[in-house]
Image (cartoon, rainbow, N blue to C red; front, side):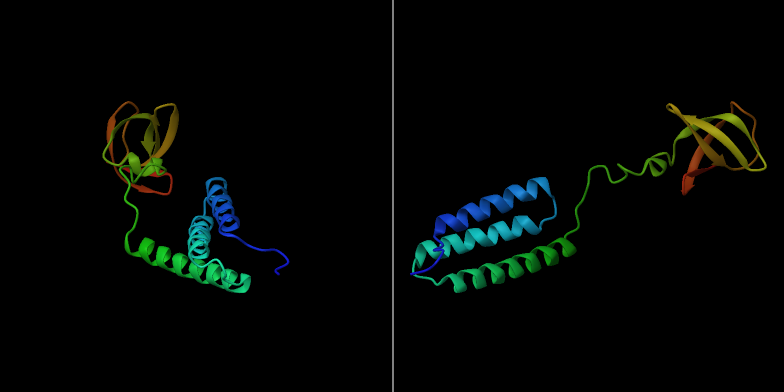
Length: 144
């Protein structure tokens, strides 16, 4: 008689807890470990006399295999976004026409974008002129 018998219900509860943990700590580790616990639950339902050592060994093996599969898949199929510049505000400005708030003197000036003022670099121009953003270097907009 086992000290702590594991049933397929125990593994299903563990699987559910791991998937819930993935919601609160996004990492993809908990998700795939939860899937592995689900596999062990299904296997234990089919083979109820499986020793607890074999159950934990299979859980570890399934976890390693599923994580390996996921990382290979994620590496080969990169995520594509409908807004690839979402968190790159400076890059979003490339191609836009801005009005200079301060004149460009010695190749440096300032332009207003929304409620903020950005440093711009380019040929000397007077305040109020229109310039087009051609590239970005750090947080400095290169204009012409």
